[in-house]
Structures are given as C-alpha cells and as structure tokens.
Image (cartoon, rainbow, N blue to C red; front, side, top):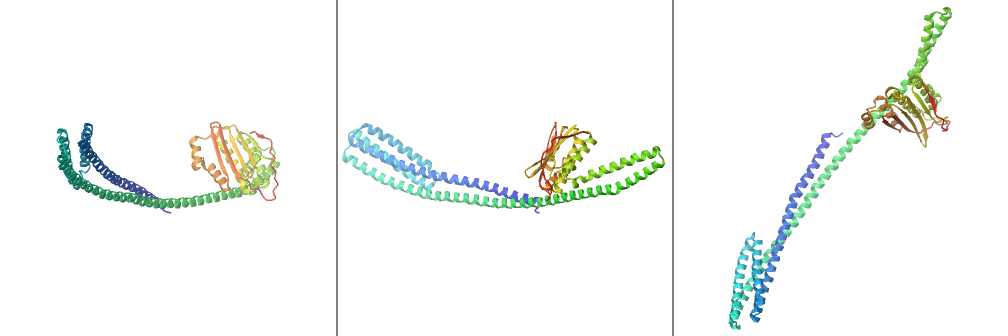
Length: 447
C-alpha cells in the first residue's frame, strides 16, 4: 500500500506544475501582448506614412489649382492641408522615436517638407502679387518636383523599414504564441500525468481499504456466527445438563418433603428449585430459543414478545403474518436477533410504555419494524450511528453487521416522540417448507 506521504507528494507536484504553468502562461501572454502592441504600432506608422503622402499630394494639387485659377477658397484649403502635413510629420516623428534609422529618415523628410512648403509659399506669393507667369513659376515647379521625388524616396525607405519591422514583429508574435501554447500544453500534460498517478495511488489506497474492511466484516460475521453457535451450545448445556441436575435436585427434595411434611426449610428449597429451573429455562431460551429451530420465526417471535412484556411491564402490539412460511436459518436468526436487540433497547434506554412490532413480507423482502413511544435517541448519537455505526453501542453495531452480512439494510429513525428500527432483509425460503402470508389481526401483549 502506498503511503499517504507519497500520495500527497504527487498531488503537491501536480498542483505545483499547474502553478508554474499559470506563471509561465502569464509571462508568455505578457510577451505575446507586447509583440501584438509592436505589430499594431508598426501598422500605425505605416498608416501615418500613407496619410502623410496623401496629405502632401493634396497640398501640392491645391497649390497648382490656386496658381492656375487664383481662387481664394483653394488658398484656404491649401493652408489647411499644409497644417495637416506638418501634423502628420509630427505624428510620424513621435511614433518612430525609438528607431534611430527612422529618426534619421524623419529628419530628412522634415527638411524636404519644409522646403516644399517654402516653395509653395513662394508660388502662392507670386500669384498674389500678380507676377505669376509660366516662366516665373517654372523654376519653383521644378524644385518642388525634385523635392517631391526625394520625399517619395524617403517615404519608400521608411515604408521598407516598417515592413521589415512588421515581418520581424509578426514572426516574434507567432513565436510567442507558439511558446505560450507549448508551455501550457507541456505543463498541463505533466499535471495531468501527475493527477492520473495521484488518482491511481488513491484507488490503490481505496482498494486496500476495501480489502481491509471486507476482511474486517468477514471476521465480524465469523465472530457473530461463532457467538450464535456458542449461545446455542450454552443453551443446550443449560437445558440438558444444568436443567437435568436441577430437576434431579427437585425430585430429591420432594422425596425429602414426603418424609418431612410441613417442614418450612424443605418447602423453601422446593420453591427455590422451581425458581432455579424456571430461570435456567428462561436464560437457555433467551440464548437460543428452541422454537426458532423447531417451529420457526413466527412462534419464536410470539414467545419472545410475550416473555418480554411480562418481564418489562411494557405493552407490546404484535402484528405478523399467520401462518408464516419458513425461511433460511440465517434469515430467521438475524430477524430474531434484531427483534431481541430492538426490544432490549426499548426496555433499557427509551423509557417507553408501549412498543409496536410488525413483520411484513412484500415481494422478495421481509421487513421487521420495532418502534416505541419513548424519549428517542440524541441527535448526535443518531448522526454518528448513521455515519460510522459506532454510537449505538455493541448491540446496534452487531445488528447492523448481521443484517448487512445477508444483504439487508437497517434503518433507524428517532425523535422526541420515540424511535423506530426497520430491518429489511432478502427473503430466502427453506426448501420444501410450508408457505402462507395471510396477515393476522393485531395481537396486544401486556406485561
């Protein structure tokens, strides 16, 4: 049998792996989240570059349209576009502050942007002054086209850099995701293996405990069987040996009484011998009633209930089938002992004035019921008895073990109004035994 320490060690290792997997997953998810943020950052930079290119192109078109038409609305829109270009450039510079290469390109892009805006302002000023001609605008246009081409080259370089960064960061993101999945699967697999080992160790302990409990029950059943055999033996010895000796003593005293008629000592001896014979017969029958073997359970129950009522002074209402079929010796003995123990507890512990005994045969089960109008069992004792069968003393524990041994069940219900004991056992008839299940009327036995 595996030790409890080993089982606990395996469980602790499994829990530790789960904790490690949780920590590893936490750090891996943080790394994955960081990689995802860098990917999103790269996409934002690309979007900002596209926005800068579009805004710069729109500003150049508005400048050309204004130079050609002189429409002041176009001039206002071109000024707004110039502001948007500067804002877009500032956004790019801010987002690429962590990249030295991009910062150098941003610096060059800023210079080209300033140059293009200055050329635009010069072209606009020529138009405003009325000095704008094809010849005067041509140098400005060539310089702006040159700056635009160089700007496009810088933008292309920055986009290429961002694409490379995006590829690297996506690869890093994929690697982080793979690492997360790998860590989780590995730790969960190891934890599952350890939990399976822990389950196997627990099952080994359960099987070992079940074997021990089965052995204990077998031993208890064997002890109860030996106890019944010893009771039967003692009952027979009391009846056949001690009882015969007492009868012989009584006969000798009666002979002496005929020689000494009226002698008070002899009369007392005869009375004492009668009491001794009666008490010996009662003890013998209580140890093992011969009616149980000779006439069956019905007669044994009636005899015991009548004797119990006389000895205890408790009124007993008895209702059993009449006549009743014979059952296996083990079934009849268990039911009789259950009745004996139940009524004994009524007399000793309940303080009851009345008890009810019933025997019902239904289907393939026999139900014996003993209830009283006493003070009942304490709630704690009843709970302990139901949980481990130890709170009710040796008698109830032995009764539960006897009934369980033949496949039956014992139920105990108790309150301040009394206690009810119900024994349900499987019906096993003797071969070639008479049968009949007609219920008799309630028989009341008074003490």
